[in-house]
Structures are given as structure tokens and as C-alpha cells.
Length: 125
Image (cartoon, rainbow, N blue to C red; front, side, top):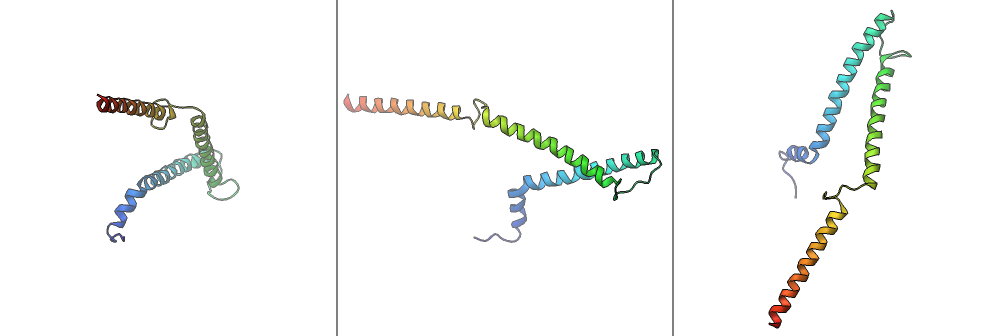
């Protein structure tokens, strides 16, 4: 089944909206961090009587890269820790909790047994 050309952008936005918004938010925050970092870098270079350059051995590109990767490192560490803990810990009562599923299955089994007893009593009596 083909999708009309006019419906395709809406479907893409619906299907990939979270990724699009997250990527745009990343670009905006990275651009803002680069802009404010550049202003701070220029001020620091002026205090030391040095020229502010983006490229080169002492350029802002290295500072921006270092700051970006330090931030990413801390975020990945936080996510990895969350994943590791969630692999070993349970949040009882959540939809993903096995205990919640086991309790629901036990209730269903009890209901089935009651229904079977009622059917047997009705047929026998």
C-alpha cells in the first residue's frame, strides 16, 4: 500500500518525531554552548594578550571538543549506571516488573478455578 506524497511528511514526523526533536534540541544546545564558550574563550585570550583562534594548537576547536566529550562522557556514564542498576533492580508494581505479571497471572488462575467450580456445581446440581 503506497502512501500519498502529501501524507509522507506527516507520517515521518509522527514515526520519527522523538528522534527529530531530540536531534534539533541537541543542535540548539550544542550551538548555544559553542557560542557562549567562544565568548568566554575570547575574553580569556584577551586577558592573556593572545589572539583568539578557532583552529591551531591553542584554538577554540580543541576547547569545544574537550568540553563536549566531557559532557558526553558524564551522560553516558549516567545512562550506563541506570541501565546496569535496572538490570539488577526491580520497580515493583510497574508494568515491566515480572512480579506484577506473576500476580496478574495468579489472579487469572484463581478466577478460572472459581468459574470451573461454578460450572461444575451448575452441571451437577
